[in-house]
Image 1 (cartoon, rainbow, N blue to C red):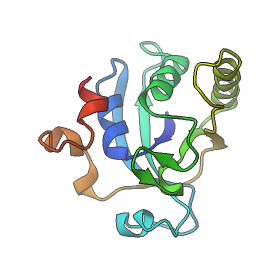
Image 2: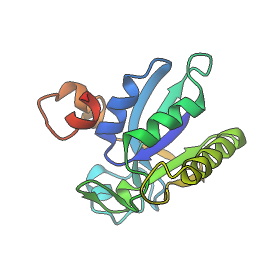
Image 3: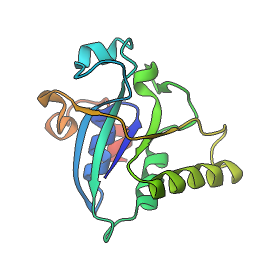
Image 4: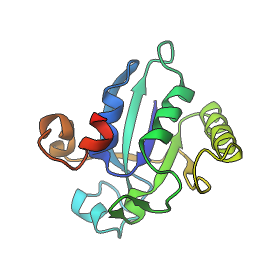
Length: 159
């Protein structure tokens, strides 16, 4: 299991739901100052939480490094507290690792991507130890799959 934050959780959830070897993806909130925040509180940008997803995967089918490659290609890890039109700390790029090996692999991948100049600017993705994960409200689970007519996430998911 790992927790990833790469902008809007509607979009990141849908991307990782389509990955072979990922067993389950849940949207939620991490890294803030209050317990059990509501979507409206997190969106206000005053709680310190970021929209995140919990990714449960089978390492016999997909490696953590492969998940990271998808993560870095699915959002812009070089913009601090922003993804597209979504601005604020609640949209920051972050990896909340659940083991020392995940921490090491995430830090190594960031160093490697920066050394290879894979992006036009340095990666600002936060790499932090797992903190409490608060499940998002039910209406946010499986959001894109239930609302495919919404254009918000279509480009990144359907392309």
